[in-house]
Image 1: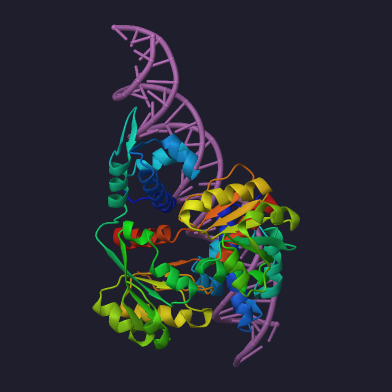
Image 2: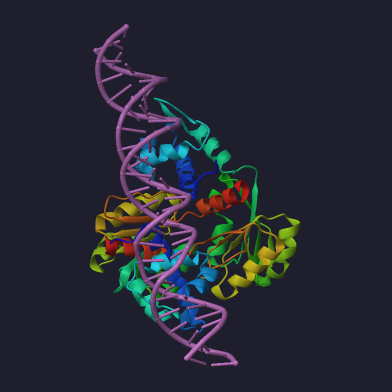
Length: 205
Length: 205
DNA sequence: GTATAGTTGTGAAATATTTCACAGGTGGAG
DNA sequence: CTCCACCTGTGAAATATTTCACAACTATAC
């Protein structure tokens, strides 16, 4: 039985929440506590967890580390997903060193920028390359996921190169809608969309 | 009749798409063209538009500027929504000058940072303030929406100050889940969540 | 004028998702 | 042991959303 998409999205967010809870020193939690923190109703959370392999204990709640494992496993978040960041401006360079990626089974294995000068000047733990090597390095390093942080006018071209080189997912921060063929998963994260959603919820209801 | 939430989210994205189309010189479009660009099925798009005030013309499609107007109006995206950015690191400073906000009825009217030094050194068209003035300026400038771009450990405190000062919406980029009381709309944008979603779609299906 | 290819708008049907309600389990206090 | 407060898991019911199908319209070409 496949997991519904809304459930997948919630589970991804709950996973982050669990990491925070764990860092704060908790080792158990419950659907009602998760409701308080995440905002999702507790019965929805329990229903979501019913797609996992019975991770909780009736009466006493969920052991956080077991729950994390169950979610990760059901979502296929295992092994190491290799990603790269293209465009090392302010946004891109902050993504390069984003600490949260490491927990989540992701590893940034390469950064790219058009400017050779910038690459040479930047100090990073991630290996950096000039943009023209994008396809070569994606193949060589077996990169699955491309993160786009370039200006709007080149984002589509970058996406196409990523697709040609065989990435299976794209996370796009450029203010352009990237559309990909069947088999490549795209998420466009455009700040204005979120602001509009917020404003419409504020103004309408 | 209130507009379903999935429809609102799609309309927000379609609005950005329309802006791009218009910039490219188009003045008409159709649900099937929008399907190609946005990825949403054309019948879903038409159904979504049925919540608007008959914006299209049978047989010939939609006039982009009229459609934009109809969407903006139905979503309550009118007037000028005033926002501020807190935290002027790499992410925050790039948001300050994000060109897309101006189109979308948003205006960044203030930036805040803990470091007085940074504020004095930074060159920006937006007025900058030290963080301790947050509540004062939100009240004074009648700011509706707060954008959080601070490190994780102070994000919750910043959110609380925003809420106390009366913002009605929060867009949070810090890797912490901000939860707000009824009446305040929050969107948490956490890159790892999107990567996880992408990875689970890749690995599972 | 006629044919053609394209288009919208929308009820109704089909699906998907959320909510409800509750049986049954747990752990601690007295 | 008994009570109580709290918990999970889940089938069934209630809602919400998407998809379908098609009548009706438009523009263009010939």
